[in-house]
Image 1 (cartoon, rainbow, N blue to C red):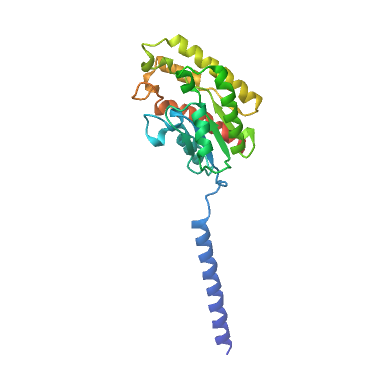
Image 2 (cartoon, helix red, strand yellow):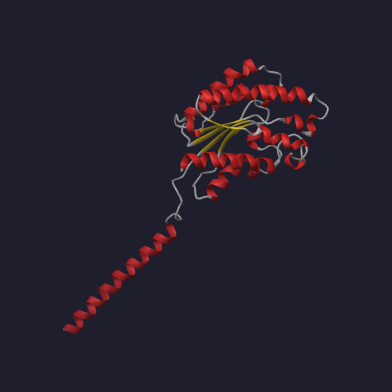
Length: 237
């Protein structure tokens, strides 16, 4: 009788041990890796510079930024991009009004204005349109200005595309636009990243220009992504 009871008890202990082992294995394979955090979202608003015209889809700055963040242990979804080649501030605003994009993102980037400059739209017209977009970007970032990143307009005057144009005039106009978007960024307490200075290095380094002779290369976008990654990481630490 004692042997029978001991055998039953041993079987029960073995069974419980097996269940616990199974649960441990299940936990190991289904839990997130150590250091991974809650999933974050990124919305990127802009034009051809945001979609990454003339580079591979995975090499635009939104996707390179998210890749850097994920590699550093931050769990980011694929970036949402609302941008089209040729868009001005008005066209981006119209697209946002018609878009079915969700109303809440953890971070939002805004880079817009080069097509305003290219089409000869004045800085005075650009200012209220950009400010309207900036306010919308803050709303989309859950009303948190610290989660919005404005990028300056790149200087395309240094690219091969502009070789027969008035490069000095283009550069001056880009500077005027950037003075406006930087001032508005300061007034609304959002982050501001200067990428213009970096793009001007293309005058002596064509590896920073894409095959079309106008847009940035993946190498140049990587520099922007690094700055965005650091800005976002600073908010999450």
